[in-house]
Image (cartoon, rainbow, N blue to C red; front, side):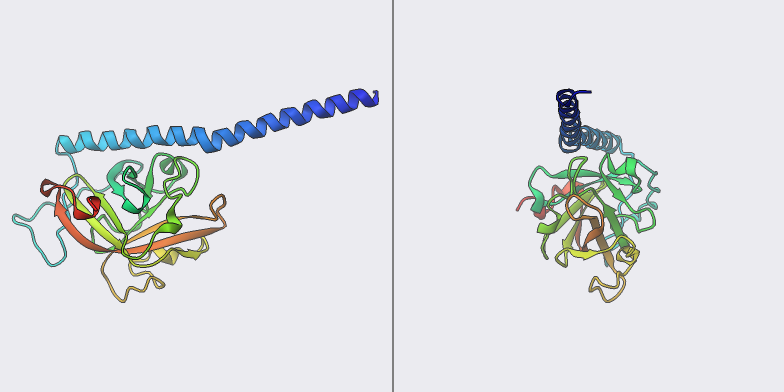
Length: 233
């Protein structure tokens, strides 16, 4: 085989590999985002249809309050199914993502995932949610921008739940499962309450660590009262 043929073959191989790399980058940066946008919009549409028909979980009574009459117990969340929508004003007015039950790979491709071992939305304990930092729509791309006092608002179709961030994102390792305990040891919370934990990967394009933000339930109101103040500011 001549040197010229070897060089040409090697060049063609490099071009082929380069093309594959470019296609992979396009897939990761663009196509997974397109798929996630369609999937998450579909989950929200599904929820809104259910809510319009009245087939939603009952609200959790607000701290220190009772409802009259007392509502029936909330129905259990179904694995892989959406049950709420989350809004984080810090991430922009158009930022809204469905929350689904479970944190499997397939679930997180369609939205945010609720750790099934943690409490229900608005309940006493630690309602914990995971989301991708990058790929599949990049829902938590701006996670490091979260600051104390930021609002995290969720609705289950009957109630608005407004949580307030208590700390700047905390960096830890994936094995630190205590971050979603009912009272996370490093959260600064000093006893039982109604908490929220958000988790995502770190660094931005890796998964060697986790970023964690903790919040407390600040307010609740029925959806019939309109959107909470946090979504108007």
